[in-house]
Length: 244
Image (cartoon, rainbow, N blue to C red):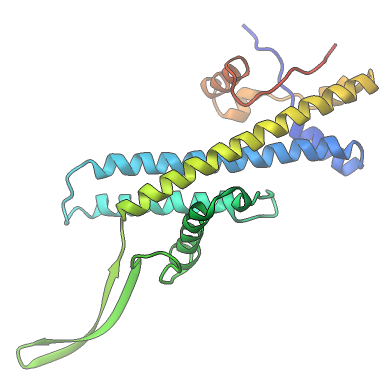
């Protein structure tokens, strides 16, 4: 049974920007995309922490380097995605600074996570405001009997359970805020599309120029069907659009 049609509003916005028409509508579409993308980063950060929790439930063997590296990678990934979503901008996605919405304690955790990403994970360093010791190297002189040799000793943090707990609370907080912002923008798109349709009876033709094969975009029909289900299950859609 064929699905109802899907149209690519992002492509519509790109064209409107190029043509310098209906710029407020185009801006709302692009902003909704960016905010949803930021929220998606935070969802993935939480999924990394969920996977980390599963790893930490298993007995730890100091010689199991695969488990230790996996734990470290999952925590690092969660921190990288959190900071990417709450601090950084790029040429392809505008960010949103949530700090004005955080209380003082939340701001401290935010800075700690950002410092770790900026000054320990993405770039080498001690981690700034992080209260632990993320990594350290010392040149030593090691004696064995009467013989001595210089060497370098390295110690790296793999997992800090208390940090992972603080990060989870902060990411959950940020995700709730970012999702609310994204939904608000979808509501604004709904209003803007309806206003455009009321002002121009041919406006639906503008949208009709950008059909989308949603199964291909989502890479599978199963994923596409799951996304379509959110339309009726109160997912990321909001409001109804007038159409003829």
